Image (cartoon, rainbow, N blue to C red; front, side, top):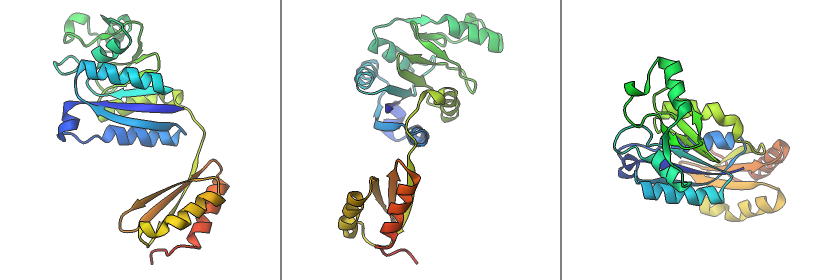
Length: 229
């Protein structure tokens, strides 16, 4: 399964808010064997949201959109997603019923726009907040508040599936540039993917379809590099 992630918010682009949602989603999807192909951050702009969602929907098996849900002036994500599919925004009957069952709210008790979702969308209930999410075709729309997004993703996590991958890590006390030949040989010898991440040491992550392959490749590399003391 190949997924694109779209995080929405002027505050993300200005640096006022750290984009932890993208990292969290990538980690959760990777755990499920799902391949995240792209992550894009865009502003609270209806046309930009519609264009990006439309592009990702055509390209990937599923799209996750976070941020910009609610009734305030800059919460335009649902409008943008609706525009991407040429649908109207309506006071969604499932959203109205959910609020009435959950809190005893009627539509008149809520801020204008709270229950508005794209026509024929599937409601995603927000048990940790107010603004509901939605699924339109294969586009999943979640809140931007991390706690709310986490809870909503967990409701539908089983819908994101892939092949289990196994990883092994090797810490190397050598410059990353000095490892090029050995990492190339590692790829040639084993059916693995390899990533190297420099820091105080170089962390080499080896990923394979079989746990034994990942461990065998890691052992091969450890025998040929300088390890931290």
